[in-house]
Length: 352
Ligand code: COI
Image (tube, protein in one colour):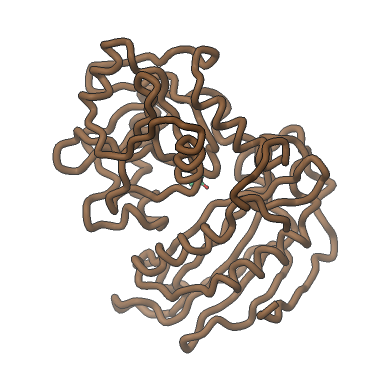
């Protein structure tokens, strides 16, 4: 252990209030959180404290200029009851990639990982026992300098909190390709996991939901023809047995579940193609009867099936889930690796 993490435990755990059979996504929070501050060029005072609100100065720069980044990851229990993380160091690295784009300081990977292990070790009773549910982990960093001039903040706070969750989407989703708004442009912040990307997505998502869709599928900003990603997921198409996904180009989040899925599929001998994906190619594959599946991947969403996709006045309906071969299998591999039912040959699953 490189860092000396000060621990203040809660006087009274709230664990006995949780109904693990019935967990809403994102509303239940565990007993503790990990906090560290950045001042004068270094990370100081790493600590675990009871999970509770804290005060924030009205001039805190995050509230005005949006230097705010986050990660989403999960811990689960294997069949022996041992708490496990899934690819934690990838999240530490991606947080720093986001930090770099948003002109925020690097967080040492050891600090991220030591804080994570200490926090989840302490609150491991909050990890839901059943496969498919998990302890969702939210590491995030934001600007705390009290200043209203426009420049990068000189002070930051890093926090990790956790909470038990069930599935993000409880049924196959209906998507609509967005043709008015864009999520990200070349050279923008699309690849960073920064709050503003999500803020910008809310209005188009609300409009889509009012029309009966679950999420928008983001398209490129020039022609609205090339597929980027979906609200909370990367997107995959299965066309005549081949798996196609948009190549990351700076405007698409480099999903860790996306990388997991690509790696596993290649190893199992699937033809996997990362490239710019034109909407006409998807519609034409559908018209030939070759579009077998569309699915999304993400930490919260894991692997989520797409039931329907709309583009302009075209609406395509995908085959029933029981006829799909690729996405149910991948979901089973990932859930199985987390529980220890499926062998993890990559060292992705790591003990807390
Ligand atoms: C995740 O999948 O963890 C995300 O960050 C998406 C989300 C905003 C729930």
